[in-house]
Length: 46
Image 1 (cartoon, rainbow, N blue to C red):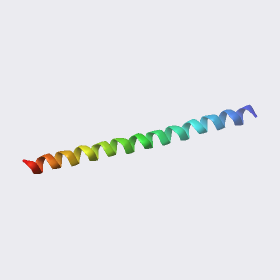
Image 2: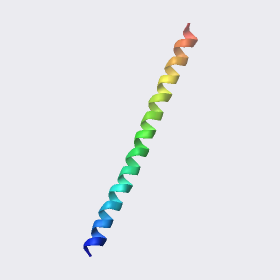
Image 3: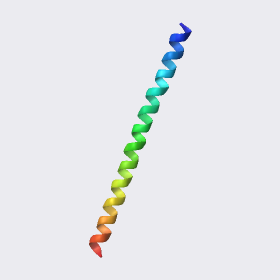
Image 4: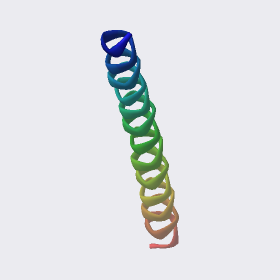
């Protein structure tokens, strides 16, 4: 019973970690898009 509980807890942490990394990736991608758009707007004004 203890082994099943320990395995379940480890599995939950692994899934949480994957979702966190996926979320960070989306945030970085969004930030990169914002920087690109700002750079393009600045370049068009020049």
